[in-house]
Structure formats: structure tokens, C-alpha cells
Length: 50
Image 1 (cartoon, rainbow, N blue to C red):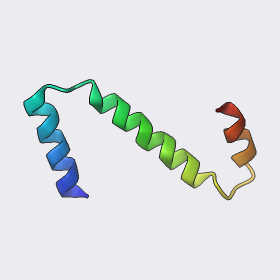
Image 2: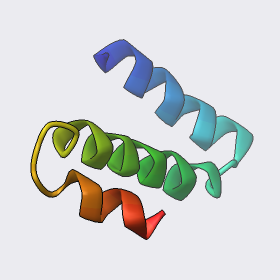
Image 3: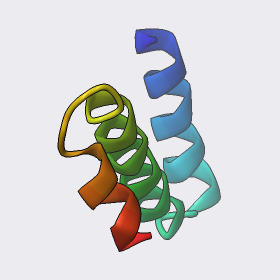
Image 4: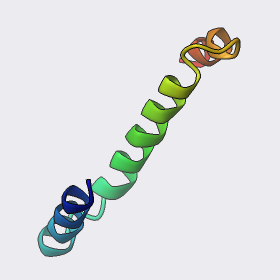
């Protein structure tokens, strides 16, 4: 995972694709939210937001 993050950071620096950073961050946060709330009682309320 560390190697992937280093390569992604280098890609952003070299290619000047700074707009990809917030998109990837939001996708990761959304994925973590869905995984963490999958088996809980909060899940139906999270799914109604989308």
C-alpha cells in the first residue's frame, strides 16, 4: 500500500494532476463509510442519503 501511495503522489507531482487528489480522497472516504456501516443499524439511514 505504501508503494502505491508513493507512486500516486509522484504521478500527481510529475503530471500536475492535482484535481485527482480530492476525487480519490472522497471515493476512499465514501467506500470506508459504506464498509463500516454495512452491518450496523445505521445502514438504512446511510443508504437513504444516496
